[in-house]
Length: 275
Image (cartoon, rainbow, N blue to C red; front, top):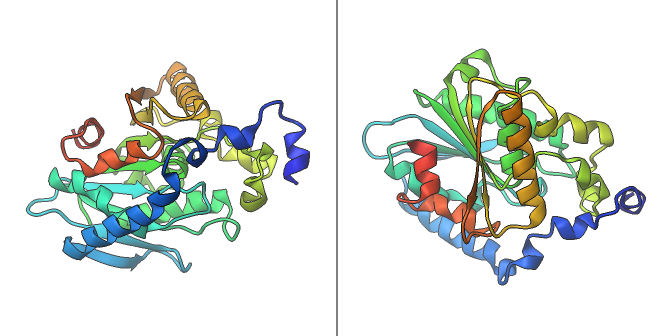
């Protein structure tokens, strides 16, 4: 299947999306994340494995700050829609928690069991379930595939209730992908199972954005060129359509280190999220 798709694309899309192959030590990152996340959960004020749907992965962790709660931040993890879960990223809640925000981290059904369109729906359900437990404004941030999924929540056809839409006031897509059609030309699509129709329907850059929402597209300046291109693409397309969007290229950061900035309360990324 991938071989047939690749013949339609003059670019080596497998190489274009290969983040790990261009970051030294990337193979060791998952174990480091898991350890840091577990240690963080042990010390945090948290409700773990809360349900939001019938699926085995329809669970989220909710971390609460000390004192008054400013609102809810939902972090959606990455992993190219087929890897990882909420347990790898708990420590990234540290920055928003220090600013008084509750942080929800959902898992979702991964490919090949789940389709990308299904994941979009599940993220909407997870947001609603977390929001039922925390009052105030809602802000979303997602990394990589999670950046794609939160960008979908910023679209006019997002699977959010009217109440959720009213409470949602900021979205940050961190190293997100916004045009999924090039993935049709990758070996990874043997796992994702994207069709041309679904790839187009789930590409935020091809959809109408909400005009009343602050949306920030943030990417490490040292990331793969395709991630830089897609960040520019959606910022330009949505901005030309009148949406309130910005793009930011974080100096010195690659696809993995840029997400780690969420753990630092004084980082520019955390300030952009909670400020």
